[in-house]
Length: 130
Length: 130
Image (cartoon, rainbow over all chains, first blue to last red; front, side, top):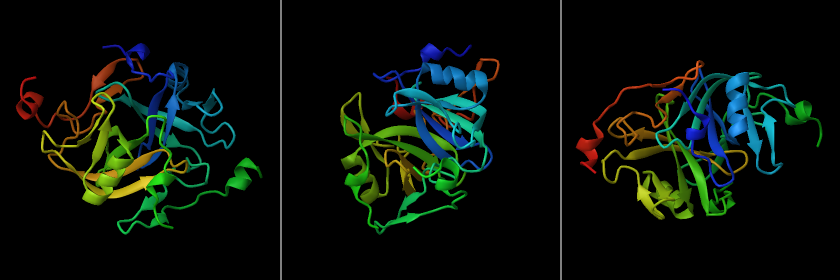
């Protein structure tokens, strides 16, 4: 069977969620949204592109920081409404806060929140003071 | 800091996406949506609950199949708009099609789609003929 970008189920805004996972460690790095064009550009370029709902435009992961994601594998789920993309994370950190993963806030069983994982870079040094 | 269920960002329908990952292998099993009540019930019961957009009601993972998910860790991301839940998957398979992961459709670089992973059960035997 050949992959058909139109066979995916996009939401009312024309977007589909994409989970990004480090291909060697299995760590889940982030979740972001793609429109059809971002799916296509991710597949043809081999680097991840997303669609920003707040800025209403496509963006390339790493366009500012240089921390791009090289696509190793791409999956879609049984409902065809979510993507899973395994990548090599250049720079070692996906999160704009400098952490390896955007999921660095852990809720413990006592209800307290702890920050987990190593901070790989100082955001102000990568993005400048904003 | 104490976790506050209201600090999460829910979409216009009051839902937040939850990525479910096997806690030992790191395999991403599925993505589904939760409302505030499902987040709360998942945290208090230690088993995953979701909200079905098509059926417009909460559902417990494994309520029909017995293949529940025991929560090991719960994270939220830097934007507070996505959850990552690490679980022990009872029965070894999360997908209603009998596969370990719902993400068993792999798009290869030549654009062909292959099914990847082991089918752990026959859906008709678990859910009955529907």
